[in-house]
Image (tube, rainbow, N blue to C red; front, side, top):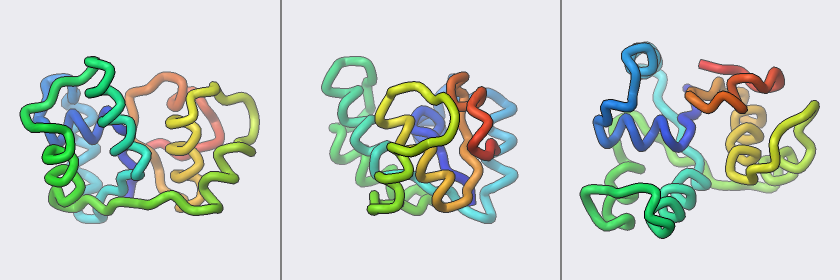
Length: 129
Protein backbone atom coordinates (compact mmCIF):
# COMPACT_ATOMS: atom_id res chain seq x y z
CA UNK A 1 0.00 0.00 0.00
CA UNK A 2 1.13 3.55 -0.70
CA UNK A 3 0.00 6.84 0.77
CA UNK A 4 -1.26 9.34 -1.80
CA UNK A 5 -0.41 12.96 -1.21
CA UNK A 6 -3.50 15.15 -1.44
CA UNK A 7 -2.77 16.58 -4.87
CA UNK A 8 -2.05 13.12 -6.33
CA UNK A 9 -5.35 11.81 -4.95
CA UNK A 10 -7.27 14.78 -6.38
CA UNK A 11 -5.55 14.51 -9.77
CA UNK A 12 -6.15 10.75 -9.93
CA UNK A 13 -9.82 10.82 -8.91
CA UNK A 14 -10.50 13.85 -11.13
CA UNK A 15 -8.59 12.32 -14.07
CA UNK A 16 -6.59 15.52 -14.27
CA UNK A 17 -4.01 16.21 -16.94
CA UNK A 18 -1.74 17.34 -14.10
CA UNK A 19 -1.11 13.66 -13.32
CA UNK A 20 2.04 12.87 -15.29
CA UNK A 21 2.46 9.59 -17.13
CA UNK A 22 5.18 8.66 -14.61
CA UNK A 23 2.77 9.20 -11.70
CA UNK A 24 0.04 7.28 -13.54
CA UNK A 25 2.45 4.36 -14.01
CA UNK A 26 3.23 4.37 -10.29
CA UNK A 27 -0.47 4.35 -9.45
CA UNK A 28 -1.01 1.39 -11.79
CA UNK A 29 2.01 -0.35 -10.27
CA UNK A 30 0.57 -0.11 -6.75
CA UNK A 31 -3.10 -0.62 -7.67
CA UNK A 32 -3.26 -4.24 -6.49
CA UNK A 33 -1.96 -3.25 -3.02
CA UNK A 34 -4.29 -0.28 -2.62
CA UNK A 35 -3.95 3.37 -1.76
CA UNK A 36 -4.01 5.01 1.63
CA UNK A 37 -5.47 8.49 1.93
CA UNK A 38 -5.15 10.44 5.16
CA UNK A 39 -8.19 12.17 6.61
CA UNK A 40 -6.02 15.31 6.57
CA UNK A 41 -6.28 15.17 2.77
CA UNK A 42 -10.05 15.51 3.08
CA UNK A 43 -9.51 18.63 5.19
CA UNK A 44 -6.98 19.95 2.67
CA UNK A 45 -9.38 19.47 -0.24
CA UNK A 46 -12.18 21.23 1.65
CA UNK A 47 -9.82 24.06 2.62
CA UNK A 48 -8.59 24.52 -0.97
CA UNK A 49 -12.18 24.71 -2.19
CA UNK A 50 -13.03 27.20 0.58
CA UNK A 51 -10.08 29.40 -0.45
CA UNK A 52 -10.98 29.20 -4.15
CA UNK A 53 -7.75 27.36 -5.01
CA UNK A 54 -9.51 24.19 -6.16
CA UNK A 55 -12.65 23.71 -8.21
CA UNK A 56 -14.45 20.40 -8.20
CA UNK A 57 -17.21 19.05 -10.42
CA UNK A 58 -19.40 18.40 -7.37
CA UNK A 59 -20.00 20.11 -4.03
CA UNK A 60 -16.99 19.35 -1.83
CA UNK A 61 -18.82 16.99 0.54
CA UNK A 62 -20.22 14.96 -2.36
CA UNK A 63 -16.82 14.86 -4.08
CA UNK A 64 -15.10 13.70 -0.88
CA UNK A 65 -17.74 11.04 -0.20
CA UNK A 66 -17.16 9.63 -3.69
CA UNK A 67 -13.37 9.99 -3.57
CA UNK A 68 -12.95 8.11 -0.28
CA UNK A 69 -14.65 5.06 -1.77
CA UNK A 70 -12.76 5.24 -5.06
CA UNK A 71 -11.51 1.74 -6.01
CA UNK A 72 -8.58 0.71 -3.84
CA UNK A 73 -8.73 3.70 -1.47
CA UNK A 74 -8.43 3.15 2.27
CA UNK A 75 -9.12 6.22 4.42
CA UNK A 76 -6.72 6.55 7.37
CA UNK A 77 -7.93 8.41 10.42
CA UNK A 78 -5.64 10.47 12.61
CA UNK A 79 -4.39 8.76 15.72
CA UNK A 80 -2.16 9.69 18.63
CA UNK A 81 0.96 8.10 17.12
CA UNK A 82 0.61 10.10 13.89
CA UNK A 83 -0.04 13.45 15.56
CA UNK A 84 2.92 13.00 17.90
CA UNK A 85 5.19 11.85 15.06
CA UNK A 86 4.19 14.97 13.09
CA UNK A 87 5.67 17.09 15.89
CA UNK A 88 8.87 15.03 16.13
CA UNK A 89 9.93 14.48 12.52
CA UNK A 90 13.67 13.90 12.29
CA UNK A 91 15.91 16.30 10.44
CA UNK A 92 14.73 19.51 8.88
CA UNK A 93 11.21 19.55 7.45
CA UNK A 94 9.07 22.53 6.55
CA UNK A 95 6.31 23.89 8.77
CA UNK A 96 3.18 23.01 6.72
CA UNK A 97 1.03 21.07 9.23
CA UNK A 98 -0.80 19.05 6.56
CA UNK A 99 2.49 17.91 5.00
CA UNK A 100 3.82 17.09 8.46
CA UNK A 101 0.76 14.89 9.11
CA UNK A 102 1.12 13.20 5.71
CA UNK A 103 4.82 12.46 6.23
CA UNK A 104 4.16 11.26 9.79
CA UNK A 105 1.38 8.99 8.50
CA UNK A 106 3.70 7.47 5.89
CA UNK A 107 6.35 6.92 8.55
CA UNK A 108 4.01 5.40 11.18
CA UNK A 109 2.35 3.04 8.69
CA UNK A 110 5.65 2.38 6.89
CA UNK A 111 4.05 3.28 3.55
CA UNK A 112 5.88 5.00 0.73
CA UNK A 113 4.26 8.31 -0.22
CA UNK A 114 3.42 9.23 -3.80
CA UNK A 115 3.84 12.95 -4.30
CA UNK A 116 5.02 15.60 -6.72
CA UNK A 117 5.80 17.97 -3.82
CA UNK A 118 9.50 18.85 -3.98
CA UNK A 119 9.68 19.51 -0.23
CA UNK A 120 8.50 15.98 0.52
CA UNK A 121 10.57 14.45 -2.28
CA UNK A 122 13.68 16.13 -0.87
CA UNK A 123 12.97 14.97 2.69
CA UNK A 124 15.23 11.95 3.33
CA UNK A 125 13.31 10.51 6.28
CA UNK A 126 10.27 9.17 4.39
CA UNK A 127 9.95 6.47 1.72
CA UNK A 128 8.85 7.63 -1.71
CA UNK A 129 6.81 5.56 -4.14
